[in-house]
Amino acid sequence: MPKTIPCLWFDTDAEAAAALYVSVFPNSAVTGVTHYGPDTHRPEGLVLTVSFTLDGQEYVALNGGPAFTFSEAISFQILCADQAEVDHYWNALTADGGKESQCGWLTDRFGLSWQVVPTRLIELTGDPDPRRAQRATQAMLTMGKINIGALERAADAR
Image (cartoon, rainbow, N blue to C red; front, side):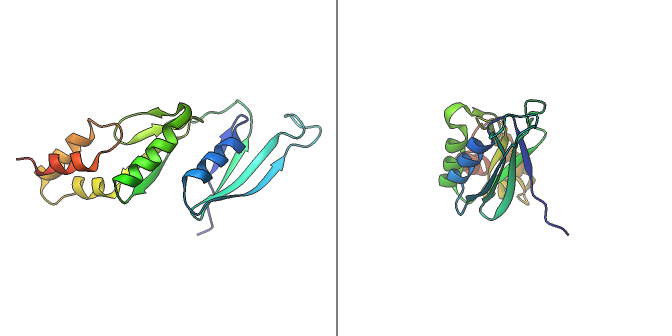
C-alpha cells in the first residue's frame, strides 16, 4: 500500500498548529516549511505548507484559506497507556481555547477534533462479561475526559 499522509487545511494557522502538535507528542518535529510566492491567491511570503511528524507519522498542514474548516466528522484518536497520558494530551490540546466534549472527544484551539482514548476503555467496553462492558460503557457516556479509575469502579460495581 502506498504511504498516506494526512493534510490538514487551515486558513492561516498551519505553522502555529504544527508547532503545538510537535510540542505535545514525543519524537515529533517540523520537517519543512514552504511559502506562497508572487502572483498567487494568498499574500507572498505567507506560509503555504508545514510538513511535520508526530511520533513518526507524517502530516502536512496547509494554509489554504477560509473556504474549508474542520468538523467532528474527522478526528484523530490518541491511544493512551494510562491516566497520566490521558491527562497530558487532554490538557495540552484543550489549553488556550480548546473545547472539551464528551466521551473522550475534544476540539483543539484550531478546530481539529481528537479522541483521547485510554486502552483500558477499549478493554473494559470489550469485556467478555456483557454486564461489565455495559457498566463501563454507561460510565464513559457520562464523561468528558475519560477517567480510568471511574471506569474500572463502574465495571466492577454489582
